[in-house]
Length: 586
Image (cartoon, rainbow, N blue to C red; front, side, top):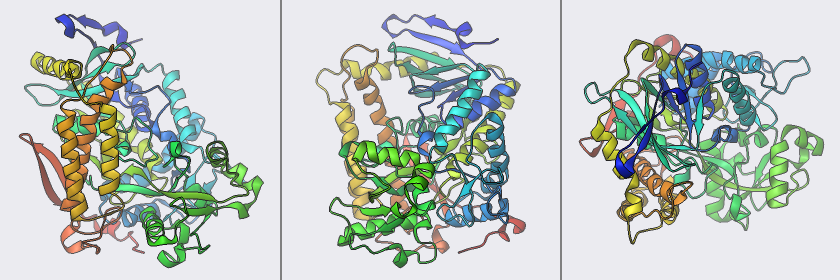
């Protein structure tokens, strides 16, 4: 059986030595998208290697707690892929790629059944079917779930499949650059740091899949884990791929407020899906004013803006939030349906949610923007470079429906893995220029040569504070401009980011490199937000409060042009008549 160890060589170049290993398909990221891509790539015969920045099984996918969206019709028989397609397009505010939405809504059903065959233990109806719950802006009850631990079950199930297939993986590896063949310009490998040893590693491959997740940690208050620093965005942009809809950052309506150490931690939408209600400090069920038809189960952008308005207009709690109450459902129901939420509040806040209200406020949760990909294959503008999951863009438009993220990673993880394996079968191993390796090696080690420098951890905190202050739920030109200025000033300080100590397990070294990834992602987010002079979905501008279909029914494409950031406005592709007829506006 093939293993990456059989290809390892050690290249000695003075103090800049590195190891080298070779595979057919290299997958960067071991969340749901990366694992599903690896299964498909392996099953199609490709020598597949998975890299992850932390430990295998510790992925942000576990924070998708409420369920995986698929139109099974187990609870509401009238549901079908056509309704799911319409919901995705409408709640994406018509920025979604129609072909991605079609593929997604059709194939999500089989991906859930496949997950069940893999061993996932879904909650069941009395008839033994997969239980489905209501979620915001879904027409029918569509979220297949395992209590409120769906993401965790998904990761465990896919991880078991990877281990049963003996697909090789390397954890605690931080990838710093994607290489391209000097003649053909297609992806040829990646460079990274073995965090355990501090050694450098060159990965040669025929195809490469980015499944690195989002960039929520560029914000101060976020449900995202520490790994979500925008690495994939920065790697793709640096390699010449196109980014799209980068201004679209989703603020989840309900994150924890206290204690400070868990501020922003997700309070799953499943709480509202199971009957939880939102009230302000005066006891008013305020969603009656903002969405009287859907109430707490309105789209996430609607509920987040409503919550923000209650807080900023003085109707919030003393801690700066609103109340979320599910006590009326009873202790047995809550402990069965929401075991993680019960444990989370009891452990971190000392609150028994079967008896007490939760205090919540908006938190950065998901990035609809990302790498522009082909709907069929997940290939980027760089030949041989693919992307899947949150790091990719096109499905969710201006606002993601809850639960669509887990089915997204299954559907497009599979497609990217299969396409990359097919591509790898047809080509010889591409080349990597020695000069590119030498250049990246020098760049990586630069922070150790800084004598009197800046603490990169503090720079990461400054970035997060600036983004939260200036690029929040409600934006305007003045604040966005101030935010861009703040990020540029941090960028100046980042040139002096300093790493101290030995290279093994050196967080200051990793932080000094991640600061640049975060800055790159932030610049694209802010510049795209400045360009979109309207309010649509998750992008709300107080100086342009109306949605403007006449001018802004476009995707903003961002790419590097000879060292400068370039924006292009491309009209959203129109669906064919038979699919357009399925779309039912609210």
